[in-house]
Length: 230
Image (cartoon, rainbow, N blue to C red):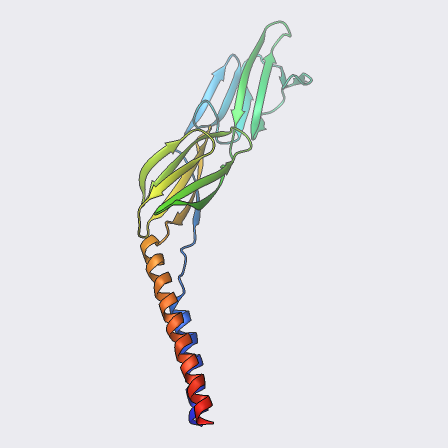
């Protein structure tokens, strides 16, 4: 009975110990936001363009096109001319809008719309002793990538406008790194993850090795004692 109790106690102790030594990683978070934008009605020679203006001449909402005055004919992206009957609504894309009232005097406007936030996945890799490289993998289907901002604990550290979008952190301890991507229209998205426990990892690794060696020694001594007592 004593031997069974000792064996069960040793196994339970090992299990509890290793459960306690597990390191819990902090999961990244993803957020999506839009930069401040304003509603705008633009008037161009008989047409009204109604939507929310973002950055760099891009709209960040659907755009309603309404005719005023004598405008009768419209075409989009050099397609067929059609008669204007009611307001038109356009979504994501780049459009060449042309219009006329008499098929003699023509007007045009390039319309750029991007309502969709870009996508971002933040990754990290070891870059040396106490160094970690954070890499922002980003994608935007319509207006394209404008810039990437890197934050550590909500403090802006670096802005990158050239691929590959990355930033190297040097230090120790646990901090939250956030990468925020902006497309040309001003739509944005963010992804966060933690820096590694650089010093803690080293200490815990050494401690684990020492404890594992101690347990192995205890198990060997227990087996030797068990053989002697037979």
